[in-house]
Image 1: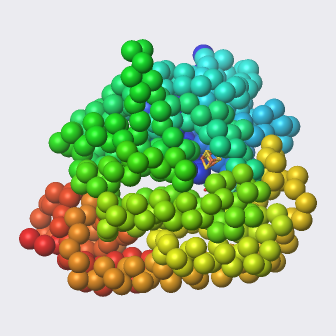
Image 2: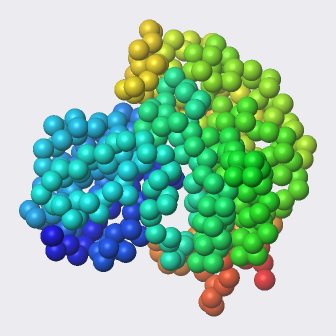
Image 3: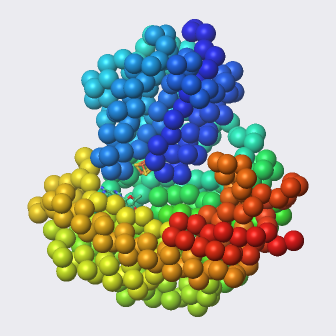
Length: 436
Ligand code: 5AD
Ligand code: SF4
């Protein structure tokens, strides 16, 4: 067995990957390794990867190229996560020195490479929820704890590689999720963010036939005194059931902010994306949410330049962005991915048109954000401390809408939840004062 002391891990992609990265670190620490930020110093190097768009995959391969040159000769290195699953054994062809390629549901097998450093380890099986049982609990949790409640997705949007990389949708047992939540609360968490590719589709039936939904997880979590804020991401519009909508009216710890991607405002494009294409039904859900929680704000992800998207289709996307007044949203150029139906569709859109559309959508989204941020001036909000800024002179807080709010650093230590009066705003952030 090779003498291994230090590991380096770099995580790309979504919050699910951030969680996976934390669990990998905890697992390696349990095996006696310590984490280093320096690749040159590491005996084991892991890239925890994302393949959602082509750019994300390319980023991983260029990082691998850099690491290959910088690492110690004896160091083992490899990839885990979605690029591992996307590339499979091709990864070894592209980078022959790689020691392991482990998919998002098999990274708990990583210690095998420590025991057998002379072998190559390839495992991209979709093993289900096994990894959750094998990984050690965290002993320290940051103030925001991301807790996966389900993995994979059954919706099969035609652009999306996730059903291929993360497999069919599986909900974790209710008591396992609550165990993780309790552990997070006892080890430092103040905010819980439930994660899933289709988080509001969470459904688990226990051995007595009792059905648990996301609203049950929220209700139970809200009972924990350490937990002050609860949110969840990412929601599929038609899975926004009435019991969940009602929670926004009942449970004050549930933040008044919901990520519910629409992707496009055009029913014609939505149909080809294999997404819910009834825009009025989408608006009805937003209205129901506003009825139970008038201060709620919605965020979305958007894709521009999906195959065969016309100017008129794109105008409908601009319209919905304007109508719903989305805040904190993300927009992407469509990127054809392997193993997806849309990559094979006719009438792929040119890069140039995608760029123009992205710019126009972004300017609408920025306008929404600026307008919302400005409307916050004068309000008092209970915010969660994230940490000091780069200068060390200010503290960064997160508002209930996940805006960044910068305040003067007080002389004395303060508790992480503070009432803050918003004094100024721009497109990117707010400024405020702590109310004593
Ligand atoms: N091209 C561009 N954007 C994509 N997304 C998912 N797949 C693709 C793709 N092939 C975006 C969607 C999703 C977010 C996580 O990434 O907007 O909500
Ligand atoms: Fe990227 Fe999707 Fe995999 Fe997350 S699940 S790492 S966003 S491809």
